[in-house]
Image (tube, rainbow, N blue to C red):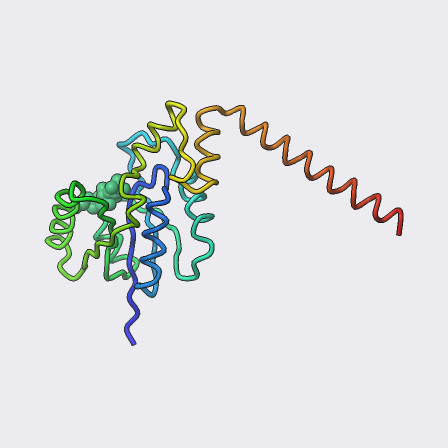
Length: 189
Ligand code: PNS
């Protein structure tokens, strides 16, 4: 039986709950789904490609048929290279449609055998975009519920690098507390 492999290309700067919602939906209809992060040297991203890859890998670790890769150049060429037969893209609102249609038709012109499949994320994410999440986070607004907790933490660290060390300290405190308890248990036994 033919197995259908799809790529889900994007910038993912940062990945949001809307992306995750789409990945989950895509993982149910495709046999294999590759989340493909564009390595775009022109844009100055907030998160490095490695950071985005790490976040997406953690977010998707529960899906057996989802992997995370990076690519540059044309999406259609990357799709051919990994032997994917479909490109997954999300449409949140009619405003996305024009750009997505243009891209899908251009991709079809470049590679007629590659199909673009549009899926809609849950309505509750219809206003969530990486650009707005970045802007709200940069201005100190609350981005919980818009991105996974891990991404929210990374965004807070970006905005205030000192938080990284606060968390490490908290983690270290917890670890030494656990070690102390285990030592005293051993002594008693
Ligand atoms: O998350 P984004 O920024 O909306 O993703 C856009 C992306 C990466 C899918 C698009 O820019 C793309 O495919 N870039 C790769 C270069 C390419 O193939 N350009 C022609 C697209 S028709």
